[in-house]
Image (cartoon, rainbow, N blue to C red; front, top):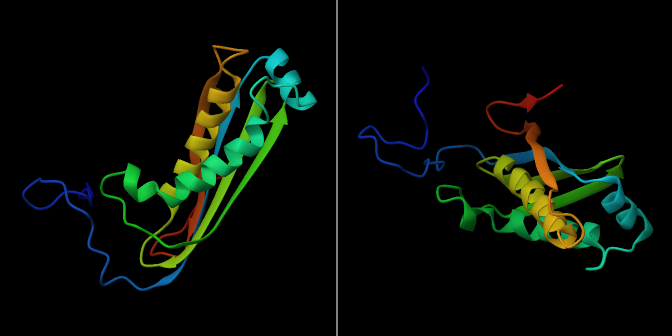
Length: 155
């Protein structure tokens, strides 16, 4: 079995040493879904949510969260992101969120993309909870990553 990278030989947690890794363009995309009832979706589509437009606020929250991922996840490296883009689409009973993150660095941006999706979803929940308490968040996942030693793409 492969050794966990965030633990030293003595079993204690550690930040991975990336000083010997090559700098390259790193990209990652993540997605997630907020599930809501037809009434809540209707309010969003009509722009009638009592707390304002959750989708645009969620987009901003996701970008802000990506930039602060290293402060939220203890062993995550601080990365100078070059781009974060968040797409949100509303469908029948669901709000789909996709985040893409980029940086030119020594380590990937998967955690930044996943954090952006997660916080965007939580923001939608927060802004819609006044009209629906049983909103659920799910299907948060990595879609792709590139630029490091290993690339990944889910299909």
